[in-house]
Each structure stands twice: as C-alpha cells, then as structure tokens.
Image (cartoon, rainbow, N blue to C red; front, side, top):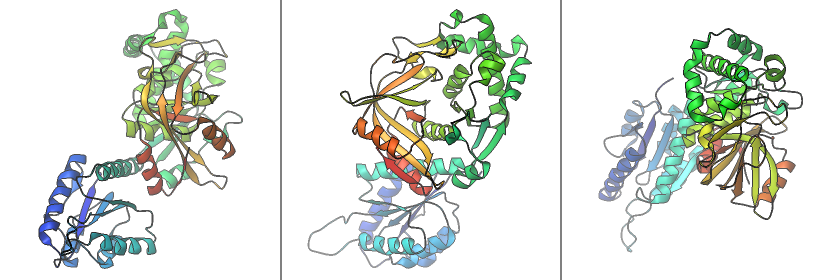
Amino acid sequence: MTKFQVAYIPVGVPTFHLESANDQFDKSVKMLKGLTEDGVYPDKPLLSIEDLKDYLDTLNPDLIIFQNNTFANSAYATEVVRKFDCPVLLWTLREPVIDGGRLRLNSLTGAYSAGNLFHHTGRENFEYIYGGPEEDKVIRQIDATIKAANIKHSLKSLNVAAIGHTPQGFGFGRALDADVTRAFGASLESIEVRELINKAKSYESHEYQDLAEKSSTVMKNLDKIPSENVDAYLRLYKAYTEFVESKDIKAIASRCWPDLFTEYGTPVCSVLGMLNDDLVAASCEADLYGAISMYISMELSKQAVFFGDPVSLNEEDNTVTYWHCGMAPCSLAREDTGAEIGVHPNRKIGPTMEFGCKPTEEVTIFRIGREPNGDFRFFIAKGKALDVPKQFLGTSVVVETDKSALDLVTGSVKDGWEAHYAVAYADISKELEILANMLNMKVYKY
C-alpha cells in the first residue's frame, strides 16, 4: 500500500491581483501543514496549464484539494480529472477586499467552472468549501475531509475476518468477499470458530500468562469466576490474538452463541471486549458490517468503541439505551465501578463484561447497512452518553440524542435498519458523511 498523500493544487491565471493570490497561497499552505504531515505542495500558485501539468506529474494523490487561487477556466480541472481518479475537495477563496475597486481573485467564478467540469465528467461526488484559510469552518471541513480520505485509503489495505457464520435470523451481518472488496476495497478472511477453539485448547499455561496479567489489571472480580472458565477465556484470548496478528487483521466478526457455550463451555464476550481495547474492531454474532462500522469509528475517534443493540427508548429523557450481553471494552467502563466481570445473562457462564459505560459530552452512533437492492448506506446520529449506571445485565450506554430519540427509533425501524450499532466516544459525524460521499453511499441522519 502506497503512503497516503494529500495534494494541494492551487490554480489561477496571472492577470489577477497576484499579491493577494500569493498571500492566500502562503496562508493555505501553512494551514494545511498544520492539519496533515502527508501534504504535497507546489512552490507557488500554478498560473498556467504547463505549470499545472508539470506539478501533476509529481503526484500520486489519495485526496486532491483543488483551490481556485484566482479565477481559472475549466481546462485546469480537466487536466486533473484526466490524470487522477481520487476524492476531490474544491476550495473557493473568499474575495479578500470589497471596496468598489478591482476584483482581486474571482475565485468563485473559477469554482463554478471547475464544479461544472467535475459534474459533467462523472466526478460529481466532490466535496466543496467556501472561505479563507484562517476561518474555523474551513479548517474544520478540510480537516474532516483529510481524515475521511485517509480512512478510504486505509480500507484498501484492511483485512477483516468472519469467524464462523451468523446465527439463524442474523443474516444482516453476513458478508460476501466480493461485496467487501467492491464496496470498501478490503479483503475478507473466513475461518470456522472451531479452528480457534481447537487452537485455544492446545496451549500450555505459560503461553498466555501475559494475557492473564493484562486481564487481571483491567478487569474487576475476575477472581470470582470459576478458574476453569477463566483459563478457557485466556486460552481463547490467546487464540484470537494470534489469529489477528498472524493475518494482520484489524476487524473481526465472531460467532458467539451457541457454539462457545455448548462446544467450548466459556463465552467469547470478554475476548471481544479486550480485542476492542487493543483497537482490533471485534463484533459479536458474526456481524461483519458491524465490525467494519466499528473499525471506521475507531480509526476516526482514535479509541475503542461500544457495540450493541438499541434496547430501550425513553421519550421523556430523549434517550436510547444501547446494550449487549457483555463485550464492551474495559476502557469505556464507568470510573465508579470499573470494568466489572460477571456471567452471561442468559447462559449464566462467565466471564463477560458487566458494567455501565462512562459519560461523555459527544458520541456518534454509526452503522453501515444495506438497502433492499443491496446498496450500502450509512446510519449517523449524534448525542451524548449520560452518567447513569448499568441498565441491564451485560454492558450498556445510555445516549441522549441530539434530535428526537423517538423519531430516531421510529425512523430507523421503518427504514429497515439493522439491530447492531457502533457508539463512538467522539463527534465523527462530519467525517462519516464525507466518507459516505467518497464511497458513493447514501447517508441517513437521525
């Protein structure tokens, strides 16, 4: 995989006010260098087609920031479209002075020329921003676009794994390798859960002693779980860890019930929670698209994320509770309880995670889903995680949504959304919207 590259392409013509153009160029480069270490910049604005062509020959971009440094006709955009097929952010500079005198830049008319060209050459999914390089909204939009493009680039080298099949009635998470590659550029590895169970059974105790020490450090009450179940959990943690490391896998979707209870005697829940803290996106019930949703959320938020079902609506508090049997990452546990350990609420076998999640002022609820015709789509909602205790046996987070929680639930049920969601502890909504556009996927905002 080539190194991620952001190419700044400032175009114009020399007949406008070059002092103003150069000032905006310098400020733009300074701002972009503050946002990314992966930028490539010309020495000066590109004021002729010849200069543009020479500069384009030096690039291998994953994101193009195409700026009308002054007016430029559509021939400039044509050269870019002819040479590259990657996401584009079209950036219009604000006119620096309006005083009844000379039009200094005329960047906006240039943007119309470029936008028209992009639209009529099948590149209409470009991003757009209007404003100067020192404006907060411009910085935020460009930063979000760079982050989204970086995720799109990382998906091309992403290895994901389906460990076992989805249970009966959970087919919404099942994925085909061709779909995963076509839509995201990722590679899908498939393995039966029994292979990891057999691997887990083969270890000597000294081979997973490091994981025992790590687990006892972050988990509370692990010593209250029968020793044979703790040992089985550690063996399974070792097997899953070796598998993802050997295959360079960053996201897994693991089968859990009934096999891990009936064939192995110990749940996989805590293993998945620990992997999530290791920043390996790990979903349960073999939900592969849930795992990819978690991976994207982790990459954007730079921390572990919650994964679970919407199980309770409170219209008065405007909240939705997200819950699962016990596979949340320990890092999300409430400070007053810590990452307590218990047993599975239905099977009564441990160890499983058993805590409410900590509060935070910003969360993003995210899901990659499918339309009835098979097209992919993004579910995005925002809110905050409340300071409330565990709601049910297992792990839970209560989200007060920015918009109506009732509308969120009603709309997403009627729109046919899946039952699993990633809850990221950050506002990554803008980046997700931009990424959806780059991947040509529809966004549903609730």
